[in-house]
Image 1 (cartoon, rainbow, N blue to C red):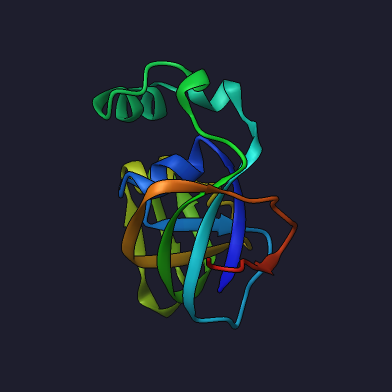
Image 2 (cartoon, rainbow, N blue to C red):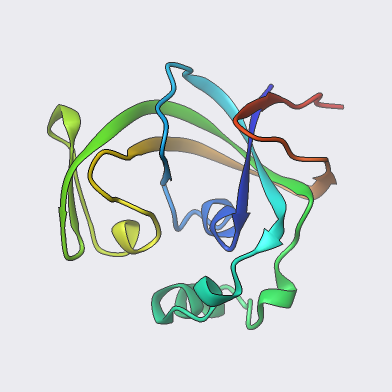
Length: 143
């Protein structure tokens, strides 16, 4: 199965069902199942962002130290990839007539020219699986 390594807290936000788009500087033609791997690094400053901190707290996560790292947390379906055309405040306009707003925009880097990968069909693993992450899309051997 294809996998992508995502820094914390964003990997957890996806696994909690709070983040449905992953933003990247590059596009992908891949569509299909995708494992969400929480990388070993944590953006501690992002964890202090009021929006992120508030949502994590709603799910019982009160410290960046509670975030799992180096594990596959969930699987999703990568359904589409959009280019960011413009962002003003908490509203982002994507290609194909797609518009995002609110927390979704707060949870990504919607700088013009970047890409937003639409994720659906979240399946959280009952027990996270240890795995070594990689750059770009990579193959995760499902046991």
